[in-house]
Image (cartoon, rainbow, N blue to C red; front, top):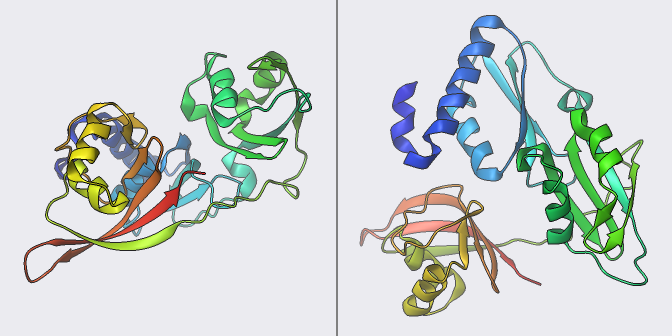
Length: 261
């Protein structure tokens, strides 16, 4: 299975090696492996390595509809986990919304200031004055006790007993088909955002472009299937599928585009 490493980026190799270890552990010990929250690229890597196995099953859960960050369960094919097995808790946040408005970055910053890894937290959803976020159940008590303020606001957390009143995502991804000459970051940005190649280079070099939540400042950075690109001031792009090459040897892509509101 180690030969799979060559198909991914060098900086992804430590994560891939962990996934291969998880695969072996579940396969030979017949146990269940529950991951922390994973971003879509990490989910893609696990699905690529384990998803084709006849002996193992792979399940994912983020609780929210269209959740981006999810926990995954790797288990023998004869086991079918339920939602409780993913050990996810949802908190709603009460705060004096008459006097200030909290944003996603405020909530995330306060959660990370507790000394926890990002992998312990799932999606953060906000609709008007309502804020909800997903966390690993094993840290729920600690977070409830220690998260007393977000930004300048004093807050109270309420553990949701059920998931009937979750905030529904209103994000709408628009699919587009692109034909590109290469998988370079600047090339894809230029066509996806309908901006000049020069402007796409300036955005990248200014540190305004992230690929899978990591700033990439190389214009020639190679984009792969499943990547998510975040561009400050523009929105997000998902590489949904690389369809193949045209007769003129150009690459045909299907992307999803979410405009920044």
